[in-house]
Length: 167
Ligand code: URA
Image (cartoon, rainbow, N blue to C red; front, side):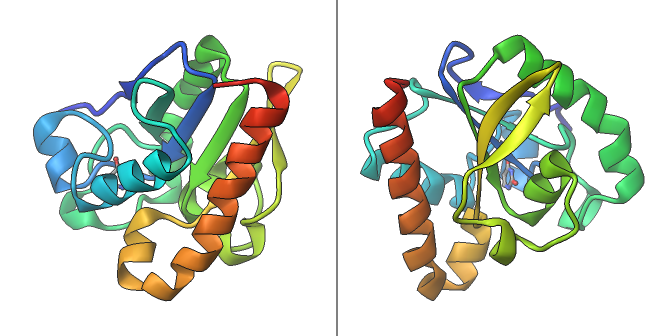
């Protein structure tokens, strides 16, 4: 129904990138407004962030039919637009939410459980932006035990924001 471009503050220093809109996002035209989004908002609130202090987008701006995973062709078609988006927003820190986002942005084959928990780098026009891969909120809803790891990653984000004086 809708192109889901972004939500939050485009001047924010922290940019979060998810996978693709779901049904609620497609209907409202905004990323992370469904149940995963509610959890994401609560996670952000724990470290003093909200949609006025972060900027949120997705790898794909359109909902894959029936919530299937995006295909490689779809990701490849949308990636140049996301790259330009990041280049224009110039975030100080990036968060990749879930495996599709982390693998795409880091150009790595490993899954999110291997990639998460460590600061990595996203290269954009000769600049390197620190990127933290995190478990996707939808995954956390299905596997609440993994919230432990997610909490560690949120604290790492909070610490990095404090160190760099970003927000
Ligand atoms: N899941 C995502 O990856 N992105 C959204 O915008 C909503 C759910």
